[in-house]
Length: 99
Length: 190
Image 1 (cartoon, helix red, strand yellow):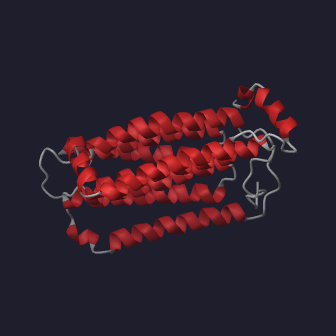
Image 2: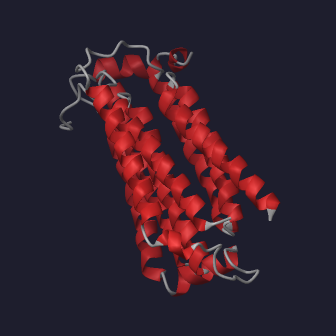
Image 3: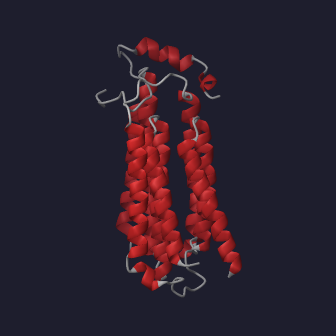
């Protein structure tokens, strides 16, 4: 398969994730859409790694997975804290992070 | 060669359908399930690109661990039960418009750049490409410092999540916190 196909697919996934981040209001779904965007980046990195026959891109994708896991953990922690404080789970109504 | 193409289109359609499901489904629980399907399709694509170790890590770390965390939090917080506040008029349409613009721009950039002139199926690689042995060699030789920084980042994120989500004693909302903490949390998921 030509590498360009993978790149166009990753662009589509990135655009869908960006659409979700901009249109949805539930922070849980926004985190899921961020995962979509990071995965699109991973797909492009691995496609380039295959194109050059070089493993560096795969290591980069692994680091992106680590960053995504950290982002999920902290984001879910914030959401649980919001729920404990009985705040509304809606990004439009939350404008400050002061505890 | 035709088998690779069939598998690519199976994976691509699965990935796009999963991504669309994440964005379009109303219930966050179904969005998480759609993302699991998306991750499985992406693992198939990673295998086609000779990234065996990353495909396995994707399935075990993402679809296994991270998605279970998501399901727990969705079950704890609940679905979209509470009505959302009034919406700013036209903002949603504007967001969708921007997303379409981003997608078109990326496609133009990829197709219009010199990449299309390369028209490559990838370099010739030996059988050991993308195996755990090769990735481990790279991680512990050439990328040792990024590897250590990544492990510190994971530690910091774990501690940060504990600090964020802990119960605060003596806080004005402490009564409410206790009440919520003992309520059956699963009723929110429909």
